[in-house]
Picture (tube, rainbow, N blue to C red):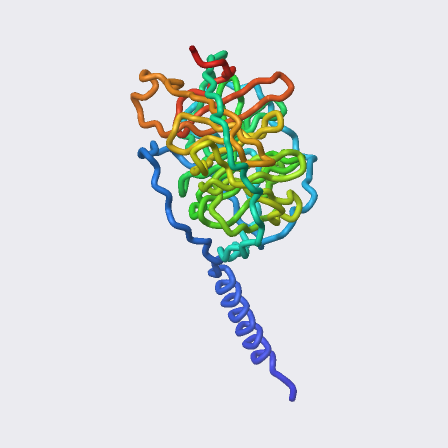
Length: 354
């Protein structure tokens, strides 16, 4: 059948109208919603501060992270006086994709190491402040690492959780990446060219490129996530109980665990962790003490009492508990801070007064 000129024009107009409707429908599509978690109650109310403009979108769950791209430049550590809010991050947001399900991984059957029947009373060390540095009083510190002349910090609270690179001397936030608002950030570990960050009750761990903060992947674990460190061969994670979990740093599967104890029994509420000289240093939540732990047996080898570290002049605004341990092995420097603390301290350990 031969079409007239008028008929052909009408068909073209109808085709263009259908194409326009399809384009409008595609543009109205929206990404899937995120993972929901239960909120954690802080000891005090956190100050309200503007959230960073960049946010991380979660890719599908992986069992190992891909090789990171290290070509991105590392930010300079020269910094002016810090402000309460983080600056606009200098990295691009990852593409928005569907987040992983929050179904926790199955709990592996691993027997903890046996405890000796007789346990001696561990010594208690004091401290001396060597240097004091500014710290963002809006940072709900959950993880702290010193490497390459800067601090890496993981912060918590739903809607305020971040991963940061921070200048030690000034406290300025040099680089920051915001977690999705449904995730409550917890401890971090810098492992090679990757940064690993765990979350509180979402059973989700995040793996970033160290230089760019690009999200490389995620993994899951069956427990809560509190603190994280490593001993060069294994990741070491706390979950708020008396147990330290050892994870393979490539597959993130649990390869061992140990129960922490002293002369009175299990030591619970293990929080932020740092591996120092063959020992695991652990903040004990809601106390001013750090436990020095033998990672092979779980025995507490000693205590560090940091009572009075943050003076009354720094408690005029809301502050929370001691949390955050970082170590500089090249210069043998030990740094500590707390949630919402306005200061970060370099300290040395000393024998208690007799």
